[in-house]
Amino acid sequence: MTKLNITAQLKAHQSKLKLCTACGDMQGPPVHGKPINSSIMLIGQAPGPREIDIKKPFAWTAGKTLFSWFEQIGCDEIQFRNSVYMTAVCRCFPGKANAKSGGDRVPSKIEIQQCQTWLHAEINILNPKLIIPVGKLAISQFRTFKKLTDVIGSSFNIKINEHKTKMIPLPHPSGVSTWFRTEPGKSLLLKALSKIKANSAWKNNI
Image (spheres, rainbow, N blue to C red):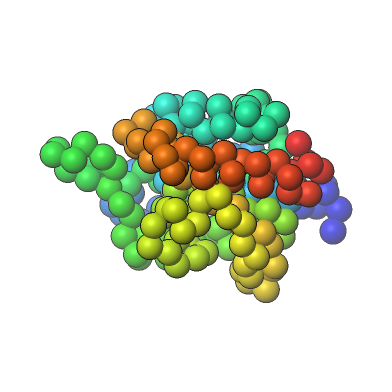
């Protein structure tokens, strides 16, 4: 399949995604990155309210932290957005959890399952060689684990829809998280970034 055909498929896929209203408790419109034909896929958890307004993933505080990580391995935000297919477990904003927590609501199993159709379609189109899941929810879609220390800093061979690929997880760059700012999270994050930089798909795309 040519790059032009893959890009056309991604554009058609995203056009259908924009019309999705399957989850009544989610707040749209659905958010997605550029229709980049890439062998690298970054998978976030779900957009926040700012991303819904700006209409692109990781467009606010967490995004600034995330892109600062990639700058450490030679890729700024513009280059990343133009080189990596950015997607998420859920594409609409789940809403706030409650007034006390101040955090976003965790999507339900049904919402995750319904949105998984879109994610699996993208994996089938792109057949990525490297998947970078960001945060516990995204990582748990591909691997069972108890603590972030079990997965961050490691790379895994995984199989999705008959597609074999490499997965290198990252913690979520939330502004309220201290995990990646203190040890052992700080060192494990650097180890994960080093593995991403050394990956052949990263070298060929960035």
